Length: 285
Image 1 (tube, rainbow, N blue to C red):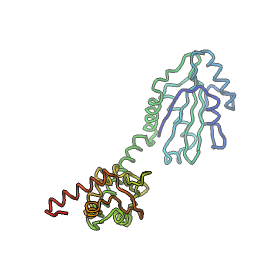
Image 2 (image 1 turned 180 degrees about the vertical axis):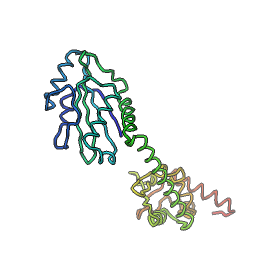
Image 3 (image 1 turned 45 degrees about the horizontal axis):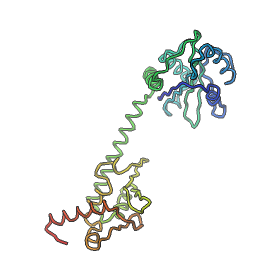
């Protein structure tokens, strides 16, 4: 569950969005208010807000978003309980409040509006309101047995780590068993192994790197592993046009069916690597 909060001055306009019936909005909480429209409620807010004209951003706006899976099973009473618990955690009791639930795009989320001016004309301190909102939501989620943003982040990071490991494993398998002699061959073998390798070509028709698409994820080579840059992959392929680069000063390669130019730095990197290997093997070009 994620929580966002801020102070606003455009109460009616913001509240009208939350009240938009096209998004299947439903009121789940209303306190110290009688109005039945954004216009009427804004006027009721204003009666208290006029007591403190020094505060231009006099309404607190919050969005509370359960995860999609949690949202599917939460009914109106539970959403109301979430709202009340959040108000308690934020110490927003004894204030005019109204909350709507939107189910836009099958993702339930609560819009909560609170009068920042209380019945005594005192302004609610909104310092670090965004951070405090998230901390309050995490306490609500833990209290009600819902998924917290920390759990979601951990799961994403864990899954991403597994994806990176699997792409690297398939890359290693490609290099060890199939020994591709060109970038084009590397792309084809990787696709056979279930990983789509997408070249990134700049406006000068030069390769910038690779992106790796696997199991719904699309990652840059550097995000997969530090050795998955185009230069390092090129160095692993001993036959990557190395002879022609050295003999004919040819800095073009075939990639994804197109002939493109190597960047000077990449050509130099690969050339140095080939020369180094040649010297180590006692072979001269």
